[in-house]
Image (cartoon, rainbow, N blue to C red):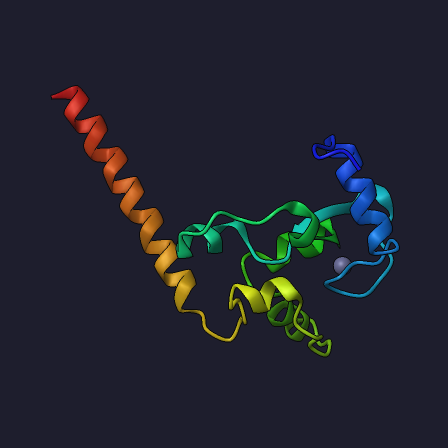
Length: 129
Ligand SMILES: [Zn+2]
């Protein structure tokens, strides 16, 4: 397998790996309604200051709608919110301790984003003064 795949090839890989089933709601996903969903959100890697791992282990197949509705919650937080049983944690959730029961990191990410917005405002103000 080549090291770098095109977007459509990455999509096909994930679609086949998950046999066309959404990993969030367990229902079949038509190709035109499917997305690659990050199992551990990219924002979390930023938060813990770790380079995110390759897409092969961190992307799963999901409905666009499920992906959007999940946001940065854990897979199991989303499943519980739509009335499904939680499932076994994946290797990547365990490896990076993304267990979804602690909402603290989201607050930290939010404050981090606010800090960036503040910095941008300061830069803009410096430029205009
Ligand atoms: Zn779904």
